[in-house]
Structure formats: C-alpha cells, structure tokens
Amino acid sequence: MYITNSGMNLFFEVGRYFNLLAKAFSKPEKFWIYIKLVFKEIDELGIQSLGIITVISIFMGATVVIQAALSTDSPLIPKYLIGFTARQSVVLEFASTLMCLILAGKVGSRIASEIGTMRITEQIDALEIMGVNSAAYLIMPKIIAAMFIFPFLTVLAIFIALAGGYAAGVFGNLVTSADYIYGLQIQFRTFDIIYTLIKVEFFAFTITSVSSYYGYYAYGGALEVGRASTKAVVNSSIIILVLDYLLTQLLLA
Image (tube, rainbow, N blue to C red; front, top):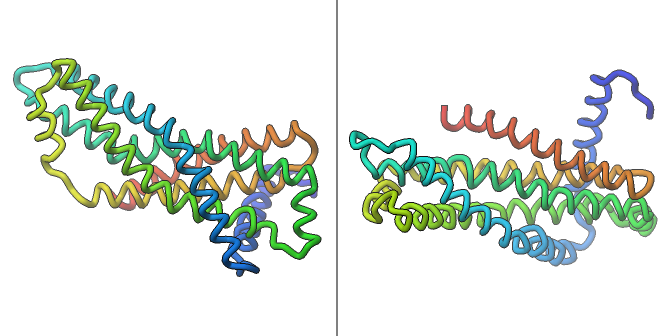
C-alpha cells in the first residue's frame, strides 16, 4: 500500500498496530503452550537482563548521591537530604524510566530482530498455513512476560541503586550512614512505589508490542530486519518518554 501523505501514513501505522494487537490477544488455540512460552520469555526478557540492570543501577545510585552531596555542600543544608534526594530520584524516575529506556534497546531490538527474521525466512507464513495464529503465538507471551517481570526488575533496581548510593556516600565520606538511612526514610510515601510500578507496566507493554509490530511487518532481507530493530528502539523510547510525561501529570500533578 503506497501512501504519500505522512499524516495518512501515521494513521495507517497506528491502525495496523492496533489491528495486530487485536489479533495477538485473540483466544489462544492451546492454552498450555502459551503458558510455556510465557515462562520462556520471562527468562529471556527479564532474567537475562539482570546483569546490565545490576551494573547500571549501582553506578546510577552512586552518581546521584555524589551529585546530591556536591550540590548540598553547605553547613546550612542537612546531610540527610542526600539520602532523600537519592531515594526520590531513583524511585520516581531512574528505576522506571531509565531502566525501561535501556531495556527498550536490549529487549526491543532482540524482539524486533527475532520476529523480523522469522518473517523474512517465511516461518510466520508457515505458521499461518498450519492454522496457527502467528501474532498470538509470537507476541502475546512476550507482552505478558514483560508486564510480569519488569516490575520485579524495577524494585530490584531501586534496592541496588540505593545500596550503590550508600556505598558511594558512606565510603566516600560524603554522608554518614545514619544520615543517609534517615534520608531514605523521611517523608516516604507508598504511593511513590505504586506510581513507579504503574509506569513500568505501561513501558513494558510499549516495548514489547511496538518492537513486535516492527518485527512482524519487516519485509525484504537482513537489511530490513536491522532497520526494523532500529525503528523499534527509537519509537519505543519516544513513546516511553511521552507516557512518562503524561502519567506524571495524571498521577502526581
């Protein structure tokens, strides 16, 4: 289908995206097969991302604490604000948005290239010929797995980042252990964690569904699969940032 107008092309892409989602969430043929696929995707999308999340969280927490300490280097400003600033920055923004932007690059490119390769090698066509709903078989388990495991990864990232901040602050003589822990506890709101996990659910759905979309409709050769992966990462990241703004306005404003 050739569409010259960029606005009409956008509507076409959005409509095709929601059409694919409707197909992906149709009733599965054999429920137990999908359960097995979900557990497989939990491992590949979540468990195998623990390494990069751990490393980034440690240095993210340490960097936030160092910057907070340097910004509050005044006898008039209590030192416990370093821990408070670290907690607010990590919980409200870094552990959810930054982690998901990183996962959009790692997980999103993997999904798009995997499904795109299946498309250009006609494996998806073979599934359709056998009567299998290829969209549901390939996409639904990934979305469910990501929406299940990403909140756990986010909570883990929060703890690791705050621990990294503790190490940088205490061992770097920037703040005492008592002041840092007091700063983590002061004015803590449970809703901040809920807000973060709500954002992560939206981000997880965006990463998996958008990446699956670009992979599913990749036609041509290996070059097209690479382009699909790039589009998946770029557009997922843009949508995550837009959703971050909208959800912050809705939930915190």
